[in-house]
Image 1 (cartoon, rainbow, N blue to C red):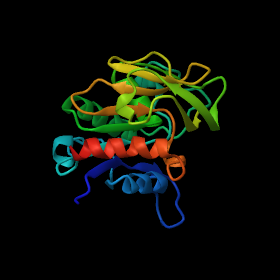
Image 2: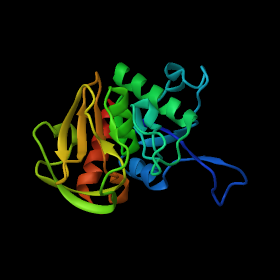
Image 3: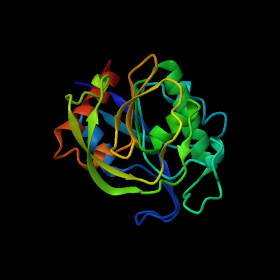
Image 4: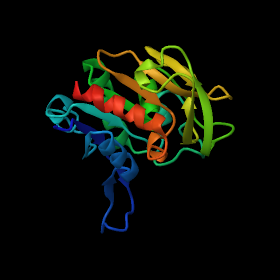
Length: 230
């Protein structure tokens, strides 16, 4: 069976032991999780030129898009404090690519899974805002959250799901067309279903952290791959 091809926009890195120069990387755990779920993930180079942002051309032959985690989105995109000491790894080229790709996917109904930063980008594209720095960070946090009505697109059986979190930012004002289907005990938005012509879901947590031992995370990734396969 042919695997659906999943585009993953790469993340810039200033150092990697296998490289002589700066690099563009994707999380190995995330790529392996998508492969195990039946997809064929491919890392794309971020850019801010007209050609780099021509997603109709660049996504030809791809079946789905994964918006991965990463550094912070420049708070100026949503009216936040861009000088806050907690903000890190902001890159204007990365931001331009992420925002443009996200808007294109949601407009044209390309199956989309947004993870952590990816969810933040979706929220900002839809006019929402972010908490620049949470009072209590969700870093190295494993917790249970309940799934609300409307969570069927996630592919996870109804009830509670155990999630692995690593983030210091979160959704503040919800963007247009996002339906919250899971929150942490402190109110942090943990999962949304996104209004789009195609399958689109966002999670604050990192399914790649625990997919190998957690059937719920595998179910989410397989639902995404199945939606990409059409």
